[in-house]
Length: 144
Image (tube, rainbow, N blue to C red; front, side, top):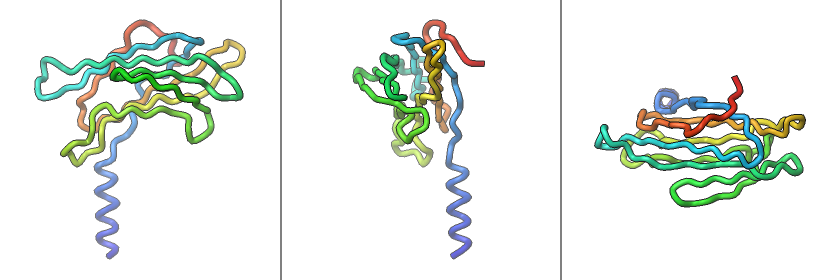
């Protein structure tokens, strides 16, 4: 029984993919971020292009009102820096028939700077199959 448990833990560790920090953005109110999500399919020369847009519009009671647009669907969330709902998870490519986890983009609210009135947002990507490429359209202030 211990062998099967050890084998299951080893397999889950090997199949898990790590989050890759793509960027940490410092955004002003209503500053629109546009990201072109390029996903490789069967045709390597012509990747699928989908536009992701997000912005924050209000900071009240330590919560950030956040708007996201992806695949023609608009969403509004309230994100908190230290609570379970501090991020938005977008599934870019479904798991399908693969045994690897799906490709996922995570937009995470890190903190709010009261002096400059700017929000710190992390953009994280988990892509175990290596099929996703993110192209940020425009220039944004980044935390180094």
